Length: 215
Image: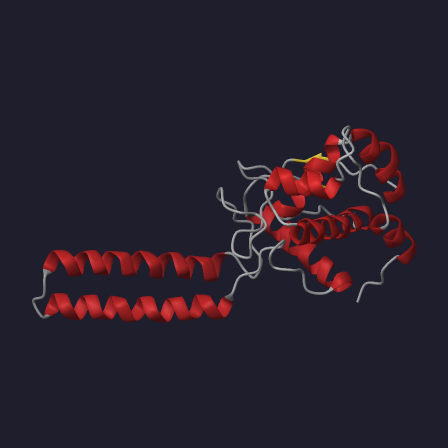
């Protein structure tokens, strides 16, 4: 179990996130920009602080979730606070380097999650994407049953057009669910124009939708 540098963590978590020129608190800026609740914005900022602790203490490449990355983007817009104050507390300049999709990128993301778990425990799934493996298995079972129903109905001479459509949809669901289970691992980087702060859609770094890595 990695030990937490309490002095550094205290500096990070007590850092006052910057107001904008109109005096709008950072939390409200994040809420307005992403149309999220106060509770969600508060959690997202806390997760961003944890991610920046990892960037400050790990020599390896750190990959954020999409939700954390959005907080990071907003903070970097306040360049004086980010570079002149916050990064000095971190003890190093933490740069935002665009990532690229691929197995190495996903491995770096998983390594970031592992380091997170060692220090802070299980990440909240609404900010860091967490697959529901039980739900995936249930979906696999149901889609397999639907496939069997389709095959049997076609063999029995049922309405061919209807049951071919039924079978095609069932096979599509089964294939996508199986891919979701076997290729993405526990945490994933998928983000496809959905809500990065939701339980089902959080998580990305380096896709066309944005993202970057801290080192």
